[in-house]
Image (cartoon, rainbow, N blue to C red; front, side, top):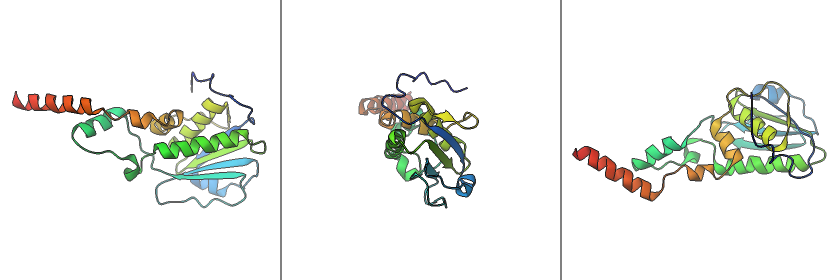
Length: 186
């Protein structure tokens, strides 16, 4: 069961009551367009969904169903590796901000009452966006609550600066390098 603890953030300004539905790409492509429905189309990098024209509004973003967590990035950076999510197809802060701004505009548009979100399988990436719409805007979900939404997408939607905070500071890196040198010498 989805428990958000973020009710104080929802409904901060006059909005249309939204209904959200998330589904696989093949179902979204087969869906008949509706003027009262905004679509968030999430595809893998280099791919595009063949959605029919005629939707009320549409946002297309491309990123893989991949996750990263602070510990992974910290370990990579401690070894001197550079981690750039965009070059590996991971969801990015820029994409999260685009989704957030689109959702904000949909929420205040009087003619848009539904949001259809799709990704390839219609589970993790689209499920994360559906969770965000429920948390932030109090949207009503059509269908089952997402079982395993993409944690990186959801974290970035909740706080787009999250990705900047996962990288360790330069002081941390130097302490880590000193500790590794000490371990090699022991």
